Length: 451
Image 1 (cartoon, helix red, strand yellow):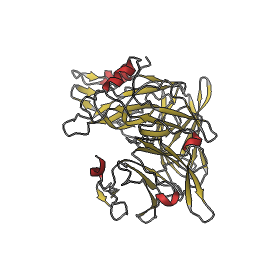
Image 2: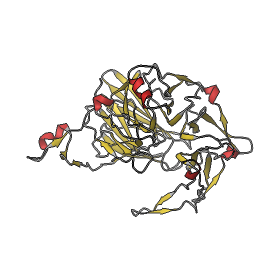
Image 3: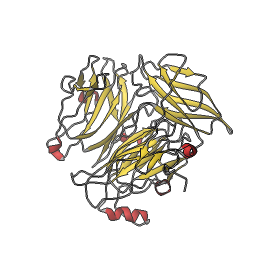
Image 4: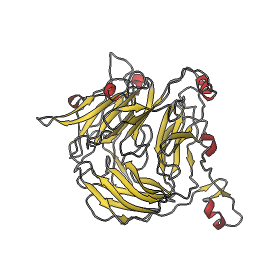
C-alpha cells in the first residue's frame, strides 16, 4: 500500500479472563509505518521480551526505518534501533531472530523485497553497557535472494546449529511459474537455504537440497509433518494479481539430506493466495495439522481459509510447554535437545522455542517428532538469560509436559482430545474409523506420502 500503509500496529494485552485490552499507546508502541512483519526476542538477556519491527520503505527520500523496542519491565517500551545498530532501511518483508552462532545472544535477519538482505550479529554490551549489533551479511554469506519475502531460522539437519531459509518473491508473470514446473528458463526469484557452517558463516545448499524452484512465497511456516524428527515446511504462494493462482507447496525433509515436494502426493496444492500459515496439533492427537489463511490483497480476491488435518503416522512425539522464571516467561530463545534411543542407536533432535516463520505463526508449545524412538533418554534445555542447562529424565513418548525453568521434574499435561466435524460427516483418524457412529461417513484427511 506504500505510504497509505502508514497504520499503527496493535499490542493487545491478555486480561486473563477471555478478553483483551488494546495497550498500544500506553506501552509506547504507537508508531504508524507500513509493515507486515515483526519478531519477539530478548536481545539483551534481561529476561523481558523486546520487539523488532520491519518497516517498508517505498520512497528513499522519505524512509521508514525498522524499529527495535526495548522492554522497560513496567509495561512500556523504548525505541532503540539506531542506538544498537539495527535501524535498517529498505522494503522489509520478513524478519527473524535466532542465535545462529550459539553464543547465547539472539541475532537478527532482515529480508528485503528489493536489494540485499541483512544479517545482524548480536555483539552484546560494550564497556559502558551499551548493547550493539554488527551487520555481517557479506562475511556470513547470506545476502540473497535480491527479491525475497518470508524467512526463518531452523535446524533442518539436526546438528545443533540454526540454519536459515529465505524465500524468493519475484516473477514477470504466471508463466515463470509454469516454466519452472516444466524445467524451462524463467525470470523467477529462487529461494535460498543457507546451511550453518558452525564457524559464523553459511553455505548455499539450495540446489543440493532440491529447493532451486520458483515458489513466489508469502505466508509460510515450518513444522514436522510426519513426526520423524526432521523439520518440513509449507509455502503459501501468490501475489496481488488476480491471475496469480498457483499451487501452495509442501516440502518434506527427508532425513536432512534433501527436501521432497509432496504437494500433490499429500493433497496440499491449494490454488489460492496463501497468507498466514501455522503448524499446530489442533485436535491434540500428537500430529501437527496445518492451518492457512487464504485471500488476496483486493477485497474481491477472497477465499475461505483451509485446515489440513493430519491422519497421523506410527512415529512418536513429545510436547513441551516451557515457562521461564529468570529467562522470559514465554521461553522464546530457549534451545531444546531431545536424546532418544532408536533401533539404530542413539539420536539427538533439536528445536528452538519460537513462533516459526515470519509471515505466519505457530504455538510456542513445542511439538517435537521422535520418529521410531523406543525411549527418551533425556531432554536438555538451554535457558537464554542464565545460560544454564536443565536436564530432564524419565519423560515418556507420546506425552505432553509443562516444564518450569530450574525445576528437576516436568509435570504431565493431559490435553483434551478434540474431534472435528466436516460438512461431509464426522472427522476421525484412520485407526478410529471403526469407532465412528453407524451410518455416518468418516472422512479421512489426505496423508502426505513420499513420492
